[in-house]
Amino acid sequence: MRAMILAAGLGTRMRPLSDLRPKPILPVRGVPLLAYPLAWLAHHGVREVILNLHHMPEATRAAARAWAPPQLALRFSDEPELLGTGGGIRRAAAFLRESDPSLILAGDMICDADLGALVAAHRARGDAATLLLRDDPRADRFGTIGVDESGSVRRIARRFDLGGERGAGVYVSVNVIAARAFDWLPEREAFSHLDDWLAPRLAAGARDVRGELVAASGFRWEPVGTPAEYLAANLRAQPLPFFDADARARALGARIEPDLIVGPGARLGRGARLARAVVWDGERVPDGLVAQDGVFAGGAFHSVSGARAEPAA
Image 1 (cartoon, one colour):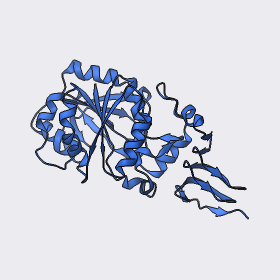
Image 2 (cartoon, one colour):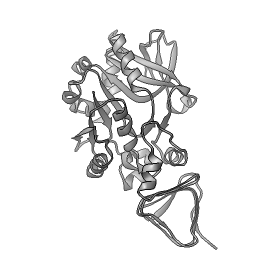
Image 3 (cartoon, rainbow, N blue to C red):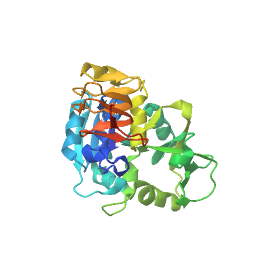
Image 4 (tube, rainbow, N blue to C red):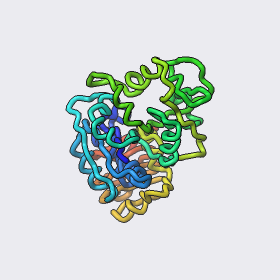
């Protein structure tokens, strides 16, 4: 099976951290964020993955090659100009349609959903597209996609609504796509995959774009799109059956503690005291720095909650 990881965005919500490194390779518990979805896909039998690249593309390319499981063959789709989620998919469509179905997912999350079960449900129904939805208590924060009693998508957030909704869940940016769905991609360069590819199909009366609604207890989903989410993902253990990130990070020299993650090769200066914090690999924290709730990266402490770094008395 083939898959695509969407990794070309600028990561504007993650600034200033994404000004230093592209969001897909920000270190989470001592390893690049991208390592998690790569391991997840390999665990579920995916053998070929394409990533679209734009912001600092060589850094993402190098990290993907370094952290991809050996059974994964990687390809890259460079986007000198951003194409949106749909445009990125369109550029990779020739590669993806050779796998029926293929998987398309965002690169800024940690997830352990059962992709095998999702693909099986998609195939059993003969869907053109299946979107993974989570009955998530954070629905007010992320918005939802609504479905009817058969699972057919009827609403996308607040911008598309056909009526007839019987349930809703948070869209976790995981999609199973049949090869035939690529036949109705818009004939333009830049567009949204939801609004400009799938929504028009639904508006025309199709019922083969469905949401697979799963209880929150059914799988782990950790979005990593903002500095606050990034810090939370680092300070929360990620017990995944397919990837022991902590063990991999410690083997490289990382220090993993309940409220402090110090990346490989990083050093805390004498008297420095950090709490609920992340120190990126290779950084040198100055002597006497006292700070909490933030990230030390690029030679500076970036507060997440508003706490300020200050020298020790």
